[in-house]
Image (cartoon, rainbow, N blue to C red; front, side, top):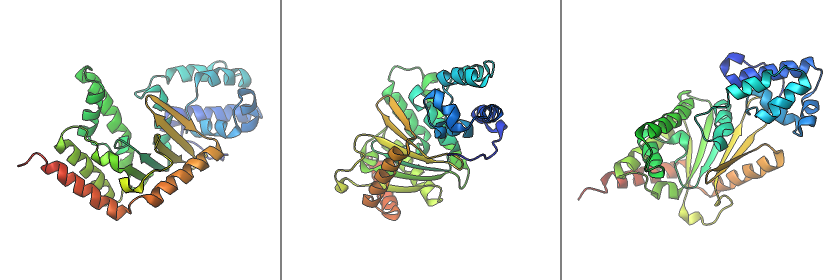
Length: 279
């Protein structure tokens, strides 16, 4: 369960709401578990709300206002923060990602959003939305690149990504776009900003063939796992479930190429894309 580490309410709207929630709960003389009981959630879940790693949903905000006598404070703020640049199924994961101290991710088909180049993101969104206006595509790309700005910090979060070989081989955009996208990844790895491994086709079957996996760790909250499928996503906080996905990630890493071998393969494939249209 998260500790009582003080939050900086100015750091984000969620941090402000979390700090207010903790203040109101403590004034009411309730523990995290005691507040969670009438909401049918765990004390850890309340701790994640207070630490800012989870978004307060409207249904919980209304009940918390009733339980703590907050006069509609949490409902009003929850409604004000309801709009997001991300799909509904990814909102919580994106917000948790922004405050995580460590992120480990397995990508089975596409370059993960945090590692995407601008051209790769443009090609991906355009292929998925062939009739969308340019402004819509530009907004999607801008949101994707804004997420990646958390890598501007030289050390935090620790980012460890395992790419299925299919990510390298599936062509998104023309050859130069793929070459640039893969060089962007190797550049981050060579600057020691990300650990990258490739799970080769020769590794055969594995436990994560049905979808992507993201694991997030935090300073003052339990870890989370995010599972994503076609137009869906689920954030898991159950300790046993997160531990199972943690094992999955480590098994993937054990069967993947080493970081050095992975970079060599990515560089080789990037060169192939760069020269594929030349005689």
